[in-house]
Length: 189
Image (cartoon, rainbow, N blue to C red; front, side, top):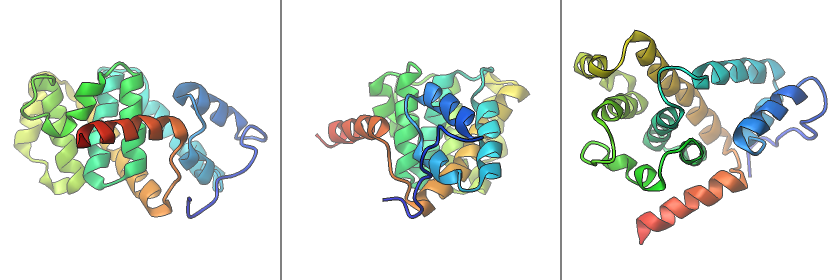
């Protein structure tokens, strides 16, 4: 159970359009947003950030979700790990690739460009000063400045979300939970 209860009746009032949009994007109402709605300005601001980070750009949606996934795994946030794994799969990333996210450095399922992005994500999510000039030199082989900012934006957004959801023990919704449990089950067999 979440440490702060979600708001009731999210489809009523001034926040209704945000929740309708979130539900259309995700396929369910996100409990972290329902909790965040107790402070409407925070929810509205966060929604704008998430929209800007996830909008179509130079980094494919599936890779953005994988960056979020490894960032969340590195931070120990199960809520965000489940959301980002589910989102990656919904955005075309094969389940096998999601299952092998910890082996990205050696797995042939990941391109060199993906490996560079995931390397920065894992280092930045554990401790921001673990990222190095060498990490950015590697990124620059595959990405221009705009794409690098997209990558860092995903990492930074999940820094906020990982702390938010872990601190509040946000209750995981059924769809991402079912997908995440299937990943954990297959990895334990």
